[in-house]
Image (cartoon, rainbow, N blue to C red):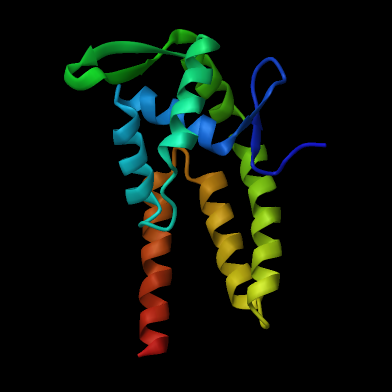
Length: 160
């Protein structure tokens, strides 16, 4: 059974969302484990701060699998991790699966909406719009932005 927060790699292996985010983050720029923890804290607005005991074993596992490597060891034994071509291939494959991953995530999100909102129609519609934007913006970014700004403007007028 497939876990909703797992991603399938090119060879059929399952990788968790944190593992995939580590690869994605290191693709953008080589960094230390501490920098990754800080980045996740910032991206989740402090809601989730993975511990060193979570991040470093994953980094070692990725290194063992040849997906990342230690670029340099700075002063005070600070390791800087860098993604390898093998790791980049996994990220590329994951991006190719974007549409199916988003559909999977939308189903999961619908469960949460159901649990927290008595009248989930507004939230559900908002999520459908978000999903439509995600699925259609490629190559049409400017048009999608215009539509969203018009929608936002109309909502502001109605609320005020």
